[in-house]
Length: 118
Image 1: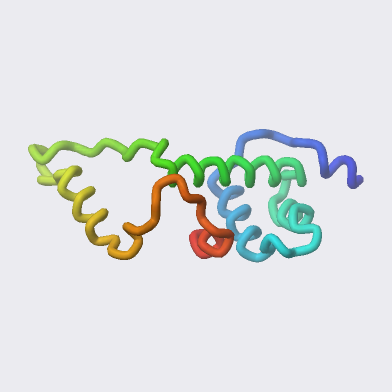
Image 2 (image 1 turned 60 degrees about the horizontal axis):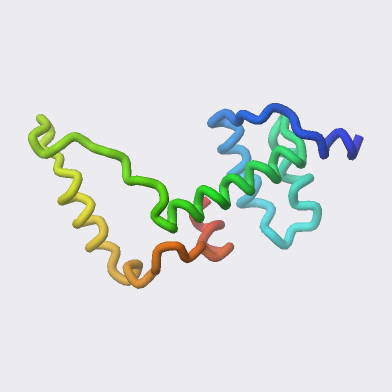
């Protein structure tokens, strides 16, 4: 049966499965013995290999976001009925970050920062 849990099941994840995954990661930290077996046991239908692959994808996504490789989504121009100006809002949100501005693009999160994010 242990071998069965190492094989991959379906590759797509639902929103609900991703939420279960996030909760499991918050419960079982890096130092948890048999972490991936425990995480997989909390997500019906997912194997140890599935959760390990999903975690690897998550790490890659976070790295790409922090490296600035993921574009900021486009928003309607200021002439839109809402009056929303994406450039102004971007400038404000970046300016409001304060000490977070010291953080350089491309520097990965620490494990503690990642846990707090989840």
